[in-house]
Image (cartoon, rainbow, N blue to C red; front, side, top):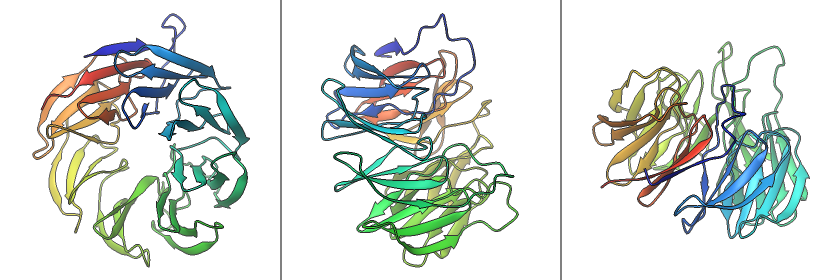
Length: 341
């Protein structure tokens, strides 16, 4: 461990909290931005964890931020989209969303895309937060919804978005008009939510559903190419033709991207949910655990090689920059660790 910094006063931290925001790392690796349950967002120096600035936001702010071109973009749990200047934390603009932010924002050209927990994707003008368009899906109020949502994917002038009604939708980036949509999970599924961030791998659009496993789609037609059955898949980590995913049953799996065939699958026998996997240098795969905080796997074989357990567990995936890993425990302590090769 290189350093650790508490985000909240441990004396007032009494209840179990699942911190779900991965630290945002600046492109040059010099700064981290991370929110906390006490309604603050902090910027830390990555070298030693020194606090550079801290701002207060109404309500818990463990949503994952995005840093780009010296600006911090945040879709907060209080239903606001905010931007701060990375250098000093100055608030640049703030816009009210139709509901809490559910994923890290996406910047593309002059636009900012934000997925909300109320099943609505919002497109704002990046420079001032002006509302440009939105796409809202209906959702039955008499059924449960999976916590969180899929981060939209932009490919050229097309936006791919997964929604909690089980639909994958292709939208025109310019005005939000629907180009195509497809129901990915058959009716009757307990959790139809398409809540895995879509990624483009080898000409296929990969995503997933709580009840439908990992899905590979034709990006032109949204027709299914293959399906890998795993309970409540996490967001995917991709390296070449390999795809890594964790499941709600506590398993970690490696798949072939072209056909979805299983390369290896392990169950580390840890209590509590696992985070999405993160690829690190040295052939490692990092996974946060609500039981033991951080698990390290040998990526080619799936062998578990290390466990880091300072207590409290962790829910959010770690962030990796070169040979450093940064992660936040459910006790809201930020850890910086060196990655061996």
